[in-house]
Length: 184
Image (cartoon, rainbow, N blue to C red; front, top):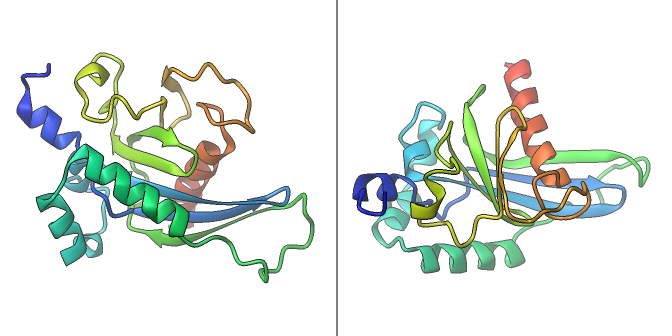
């Protein structure tokens, strides 16, 4: 599988987020950035407006080390939910999409790299058999599909408040993409 250069190229991520969600839950604020794989980029699940000059240039200079540096820098310099937002109670949940170029009803798998950093790929793109040859293999901690099924987990964590396949951020992403489908 490591000899399949076309598959490896399609598994590479784009360093420009396709979805950014800010959230507040029980007083905790966070930002979720979701980056597409090149294969997801060329699917019908992406709005055409996403293909900007920034996206094009990121494809020309891509490497895993560069991708990770860029997304880590964006994570720590990125925006968070404003404290002036009208949230009635600390126990309430609030989320808002800052960026969204994903069309309704996508079929996907999502790989969790760390808290706030996710890569979205096509259905079965991050399957357990292809992960050893995936350029992101060293960064991927767990993978879920659009229905919430855990396809891969190396964290062993079963807590919704700690990073792992059951971490709250993955449910926030699923809820957002589902609500988007219903709203349309």
